[in-house]
Length: 283
Ligand code: PAF
Image 1 (cartoon, protein in one colour):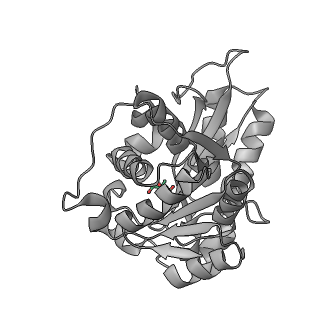
Image 2 (image 1 turned 30 degrees about the horizontal axis):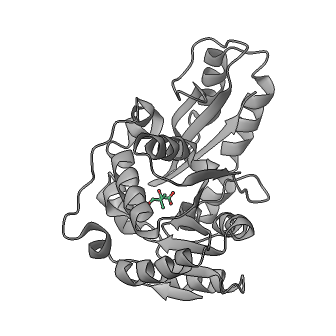
């Protein structure tokens, strides 16, 4: 498995492979890899000749300096986990901040027709400008045929699809199912920061999502929101930031359901300063 730190070097190798007709897959990550990331890499290995995995904690997508500082960085075990796949078709790209931002550590400003203003966009101002800036930059460097994103960050996935359309970037975006621990907690790099007490409490997030799905046909969106808020009231360990039922396309919160639309429930919860998000398709 080859590991690159500089864009000029990885680009040169990728250009050679592309000239030979290879199909290139790309899995962007911020490291602290887990089985959910490995599932993306394995899926990418099925339909690409080479799979590039980037490991880069992107400063511009953090709206909170302490969240950036505390974000887990586990480079050696990330490499070991990727090595465990025993695949010489994987290339790892672990750039420095300067290799990506070239001395201008700023996000570009994007307009994704409102998708960027809902949920995560509302609670983490500037987050999606940072995500889109770095992903666009990665697409320029790696120039992949296919890129893989987890559905845990469903809004991010929708925004990347929109970005590719808007900027006419020749890459196919593939969304991959959420990977869960055996107790239902969505896999996330942030889970590594949970204390055992927080970890034991965290499966409640998926429990309420599943219940909301079960009740969706018979209850109004308002009733479900109220019920979920009740489950976290006075919880002591988990604090609900938002629970929203939204139209899957526009990501706008809904008041009333109509038969033909697809809906999804989105949730963000704090355990102390650790922020966990999840979502579920409702119909
Ligand atoms: O989902 C993530 O880990 C990040 O937002 C991404 C896509 C790697 C961009 O930094």
